[in-house]
Structures are given as structure tokens and as C-alpha cells.
Length: 304
Image 1: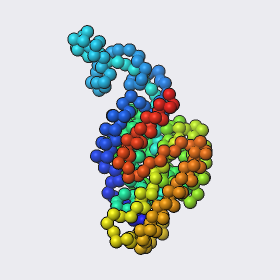
Image 2: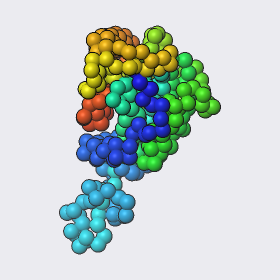
Image 3: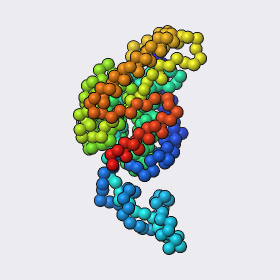
Image 4: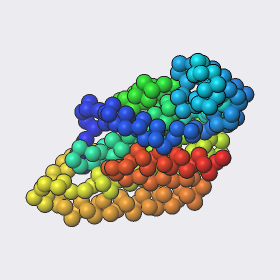
């Protein structure tokens, strides 16, 4: 299909990132990703006591009845046992297939939106977020784990940079994910999984899941092969793998979309057989961020 990512136009805008933040505020205020107990105090879930409210503390944690006893000077806030969180290391696919798409909506755009969601979720809870990019053969460090909202933006930018460089980046690389992950991490693997041979990757991820918290986010990619709304029944398509253009019909494009869906069904089934959790997400869905956040909420609930 068309080389949609061949320009420097951002795959994810700052308004998209702000939308993610709004979803997080609404759906994930009291949840964290990859949490485990800690001995320090902070903004976890178990009440540790009361103290004076300070600038930067959450307003939602103010104990209003107790604050009336001090005539609201000072305000009294709850203090919670903090949860020490595993880094969120996002693995994002930069394979040539992710450039496929019509109408300015490549698969890579959906992957970038998922990267933004995970990175913003980590930022929201002051967790570290990092990015590893990969294709069928290589895995590369794009962004080392750090904390902060601006860092979430860097993860999105780095994904697009690695996508455009098509494997020419000089960042540290390895032939497996384990060689790039320094400590136990939450690892969402975001991809269309349109590899010629997906089994080696699935086997690697299953091995990785014995130590890390790994799950797959599969971008249902049939949307990338939908015929443009305004056309005469034929379209000039660009093959990202052969760098050639050809004219194809709407029926040919529909068949290609069906084959993509069937292939992804097979890969998802194989992943689940290996014990890997799979979230399938439509790339151009209107509730993309909300669906992803809801999945994280449910995942957290089941692991308590």
C-alpha cells in the first residue's frame, strides 16, 4: 500500500496525547502498572496515616472531616504506602508492513498511539517508561526508561524516528529482547504480527514472559487495506517491500484484507497456546485509547 510514513508528519499529535491523559484521569486514577509493595510512603493504595497537605499533593486525598478540625489551616491529607513499580518497557514494531495503509492511516499510526497510551500511563503514576523497537530480526533500544510526561512524548518521537530510519539507527541492538531488559519489567509488545515466520518471535516472547510481565497488543490491520471511500474502483498501490507501484482493484484489496485477518487469527491463537495474553485492537477505532486503558484496568484487577 502507500508509504504513509515516508514524511516527517507526526504519527501522534499532542492533542492525541492529551486525550490519553484525560482517559487516564477518568479510568485509572487509583491504579498503577506492575505494582509491588514498598517500604516507603507515597501515593499507593494502603492508608499509612494522616499529614499536612502540601502543594503537589492530590486534592482527592484531602481528608475533609479532619481538615475541619484545623479550620482548614492546614488541610489534612491521607498518606498511603507507596507501591514500587516495575518499569514499563514498550516493544513497538517497525517492520515495513507497519507502513501499509490507506487514507493517511498506516498501521504504524495505531502502534504509535498505543506507545503514547502506555508511556502516558507510566507517566501518570510516576513510573519509568522506555521503548524498544523491533522487526523480525533485530531489537533496538530507542529510549531508556525514565519518568515524566515529556518523556512519554520522546518515546513517541523515537518510535517514528526508528520507523523512518528503517534499521539504519546506530542505537544499541541485540537479537533478542532479554539482552536489552536490565530488570523485571512490564512489556507490552505492539505489532501487526504480519511476519513471514512469527513462531520464532512468539517463542522468544514466551520465554521472556517467564521473568517479565509480557502481553501482546495486536493491531487488527484489515483497516489498512480498506478501499478509499472516493475512488473509481481501482487504486494505485505502493508495495513497501518491493518499492514498486501497481494498480489493483477493490476486490483484490478486499481479498488482501481478508487474508490479513485470517493470518492474524492464526498468530493470535498460536500466541495464546504459548500462554501469552493477547489484546486485539482495531487501529482506527474511535475508542482506541479507552479500550487500551480499560484492558490495563482489568489486567491490574485480576493480578491483585
